[in-house]
Amino acid sequence: MQSPPHHRSRTLFLAAALHAFTHVYQVALLPLYFLIQKDLGLVSVGKATLLVTALMIAYFVPSYPMGVLADRISRKKLLAIGLGINGLGFIGLSFARTYELALLCVIIAGFGGSFYHPAATAMVARLYPTGTGRALGLVGMGASVGFFLGPIYSGWRAETAGWRAPVLELGILGVVDSILFTWLAAEETAREVRPVENRHLETMFPTLALWMFFIASAFAFSMRDFAGSSMGSLGSLFLQKAHGMDLKATGVALSVIFIGSLISNPLFGGLSDGARLRTSSIVLVLAAVAVATFPFVPRSAVVPALLVYGFFFMANYPIVEAALMESVPDAVRGRVFGIFITIGGLVGNLSHWLVGKWVQRLGSAADSVAAYYPAYALLATLIVVALVGLPCLAAIRRREGLSGSTAGAPLPQPESLPQAP
Image (cartoon, rainbow, N blue to C red):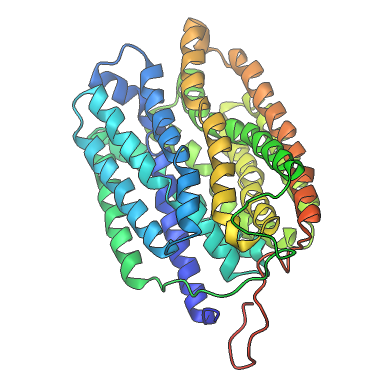
């Protein structure tokens, strides 16, 4: 049995809303580093940026166990519970009076966020076995909204109400949305999928070669994730230190990164359904160019430059996720994505802490734009390195004997049952 079209569409919309909150929490603290440092009496801004690193480590470490659960129990329930925990962590953070308690709260929030991607990505790929790139692109619009609203809202509210107010309000809204999702989302309809050459699907990859291709792709894309995370934290410090922007202006500038992805995610996601490798290569190369040139643009052009960067960089995520989901059978997708995001996340999100330490070591030079040239050149190089992951995913799909239209394709259905678009 397949879900009726209106159930699939509603679930897709609700998953996008959860996606928005998941990423709101990842970026809401970016404009607040210096306020948090002052309020909690921290000796360096590096300890403030470490809060985001801790949140993201807690977000990625449980990804494989969450993938196991996503392959075995209700993905709808996992998504609702996860967002509820995520929101409660932020509510707790808003009341934290010590650094240790703040660390505990962001770890709880990150753990709640870890429920989302393995369950949601596998669920969308199952609901839309054809047009997977476009479907994931539409869900990716939720991330765009979250990434956009997180820093702009927290920066705006913190300007007048302090850093705790936006943290509390965003936490409450997340808990409310988790309740709405539980009430309104349709339970995913189970349906049969073809096994691949009748092999035992408890095994994610039946050969060592497939494992090697998979691990290589995950590490390659972790370089992309490192660069993307760095553009947030480094961008926040760069704009405030080198360009002298205040909290509100910094929040607005960082939020602009994600406006363009509202268009580029579904646009390039849909285009990639016929050409994954070519489309993803184009957006990643153009994103690398945007990163390399960013510190050279004048302050008046910072916002358009970030808009261009975000338009291309963010569009690669639904494309790569669709390629990954099409490379493996439905029965193992949650676990495969769990390992993939764990590797990428742990490597990529060390950036928040490392960026804070690097800027601290610059000392008075941190006020100079030229001091940041090498850092942005390195980030652009890492994005180019990520291109190695694309042929690795293609090799997995070929060796598994899968194509985009059959990786999760249902067995033949009676004519009276609605088919996925």
